[in-house]
Image 1: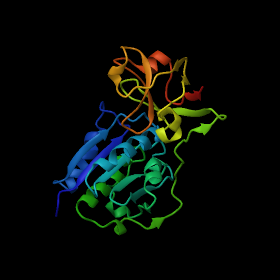
Image 2: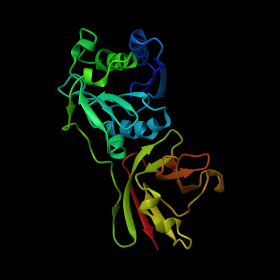
Image 3: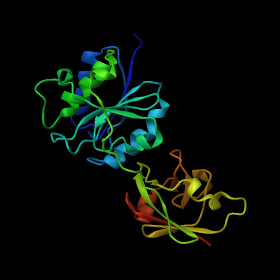
Length: 266
């Protein structure tokens, strides 16, 4: 049997034992598993941030990697554990919308409600089901247990539509900051396809208002501007980002996740 790859995306951080315990449970069941950390710095309890993070990462892994995603403010409640699959990947997560960006990218996805409790650790904690429910399912999958063994397909799983920018008149668009990365880049929900005039041969002058500042310059790379000058750039995520060369656009514009982003063309 080929070695399985498992990725971990959580809001657990690195100060406590939680991440190590997840790995221990998986490796005890499937010692040959290769475990890769995508991130454990998802904003605590922030389902949108978790959904964005896994959606940015999973496609870069080999087919049929198992992705464990735990951002679970409803732990211990009636929310369901689920096993989902896209065309080429597996996802184990709580049923709270944390896979919504993946659902939007993968129209052929399927979702199972995990009900086969004999695969869980016992007793099941009401506060750490990542250890007792989700990690064991991943371990058994890595050992080769087929998805059908864990539960039936469902269609009433929780999902939300990723936030989309909205027209605000003939020459304006309203978006939002969906992520602030560790460099202070403000990642918006606006794609180049939403603002094609910005990239046309004779692009008109534009203004992007966010926080307490305005941006009027489009860059191809960070080094095109002086330090601490704020500009807009197409980031690796495929979204427009408000950025600064060797500085924090979030600090300079005094903006955070959820800030309105107004694009206006002359």
